View 1: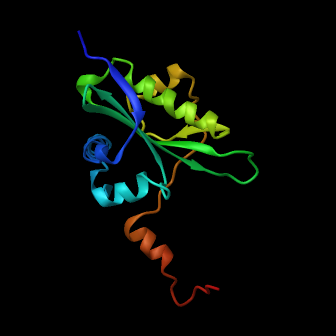
View 2 (view 1 turned 180 degrees about the horizontal axis):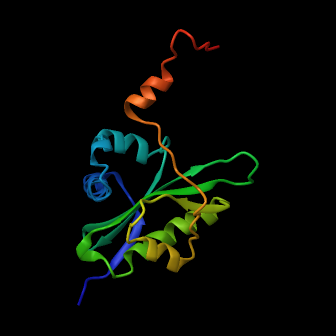
View 3 (view 1 turned 90 degrees about the vertical axis):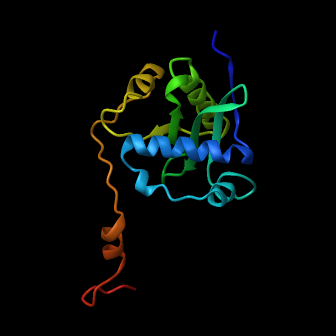
Length: 167
């Protein structure tokens, strides 16, 4: 019999597990090179009065087996925020136990409590979690494209050349 799990608000003591899960997720997505946050960064941005995002964890006994990270975003013309799900990760050996669904339920409850108009997420094509999202009622926005400006391209666009006037 598998031990039960609970979903709870993350606490600073969970930071090593959160970092481990974030790295696991980034490795699976091929974006491990982008994960640069230190434990101090997680403590500053994830906890306390200045927290920039909300973290929920799923714990089996004392082991953190999954996490969901979300934050609010506001769009002009919409009444209420959008809660963006940035990360959902459940360790492989703990999958198929309802942990992902329970974490998403906590994010949805957060969205409702904050008056959000929706929960939004972006994921890579081919991600197996799509079946979970669709089963729960997430809709695929197939007409949208997600663009990223990063690295040297970001540097180049942000640095005006002599022929570009910047006020």
